[in-house]
Structure formats: C-alpha cells, structure tokens
Amino acid sequence: MPEITHNDQLREEFNRWAEAGRGEGMERDHLPIVLPMLAKMGIRADENILDVGCGSGWLCKLLAQRVTEGRVVGADISDEMVRLARLACADLPNTMFVGGTAEEIPWRPNFFSRVVSVESSYYWPDPAKGVREIFRVLREGGSAWILINYYRDNPHCHQWGSLLAIPAKLLSGDEWAALFRDAGFADVAHERIPDPTPNPEVYTGKWFRDAAELAAFRREGALLVRGIKPAS
Image 1 (cartoon, rainbow, N blue to C red):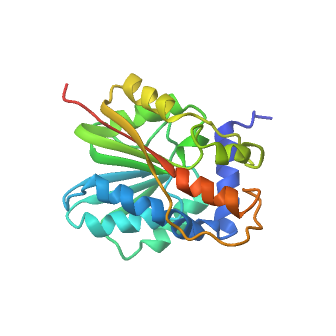
Image 2: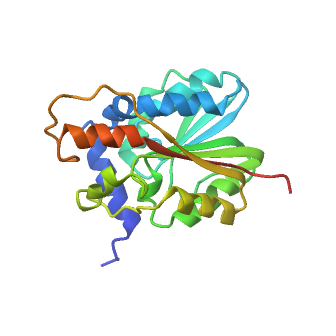
C-alpha cells in the first residue's frame, strides 16, 4: 500500500471542506483583512495574478474584477475546491483554475506579475520550497504577497495547532521573511493587518477561550509578508 503523504492528507481534508460548503465561508471570514492587502498591492488592469490555495475562488473573483485586461489563475490541492471555483467563476473569462501544490506550481517560469496566498501557506509541507516555487513563476519585478492568521508572533492563535486536522507550520514574521530572502526576493517586509470585524459579546466556538481572546487575536491582526523578484 502506498504511503499517505502530507499532501494526500491536505487534499482529502480540503475536499471534505468543499463538500461541507466551508469554502464559501472563507470570503466572509477573511475579507476584512484581504481588502487592506489588495489596497496595498495597487493592482493594475493588465496584470497576471496567481492565487495559491485559491479554495472556492472567492479571492480570484475579486482579483478578476481588478485585472480586466489580464488573467487570474487559481491553484489548489483540492479537486473539489477547484471544481467549485470553476463553477463560481464561470462567467469570468479572465479566470482559470488548476490543481496543484505550492511546492509544484503547474505553470511556466517568469509569467505572473503577482502571486498571492491567503490562509494557505502554513499548511504547506515545505514552506521554503513553496516560496521558491512562487519566485520561479513570478516575472522580474513581480511581487509575492502571503497573508496568514496562524503565526508565532500572535499568541492568541497558538492553540489552533492542536485543533487543526492537518499539521501546520507555526512560523514568525521574521522566519517567513527569511524564507523569502533565501528564495531570492528583495525588498522583503512583513507587517500586521488588524481585523476590524465587530467582536461578539459571547464566543462559543472552539478556536478561542472566550470573546476577550478573540478580540485580542483580531487586534494583533493577520501577518502580511511580501517581497519583489529582482531583475537578474
């Protein structure tokens, strides 16, 4: 019997998410931190953008509205998420979706002007290889943007590690930045994007102890790491 790899587990887990309709909730949960990132990106209409870990395609929809003369490609390890994304974006001719992992992006080198990844990179089995692959598919002068809520500098998310069905990498902002520099990126920086979502008076979910911890987590914000592929 062949060995079950980390990527096999990821595929199965996110296929289950897709079948359970959890992909649709990603836009609601992440839009408050994604919109500030998009504002910082200053996207032009003629850009080609890759979304790594695109899920059900909600971010690709937003990107496609901005790159009316370009192309948006979504890549995801989950077959079911790719299927849902294709359905969701069927009326957007400048989008396409492919199955693939961050460690082996199914695209030729030096093509995209931007690569984004939202709430995906801490699941990558080999983050260093994923960052190198992003560098490979970017054209010179292109930029990478990784946005995540699970990172070492925010103590209010550390408990997620024991709750996630798939092992995840808990790296700091400096560690992510080092991976970018090691891959060849220049002008590497990281910052926080606080989540302005109104906090409930009572929290009953499994991810936080109570509403106070949720509020503290949102104040710390998501981690945004970015870098530019320099000219040869």
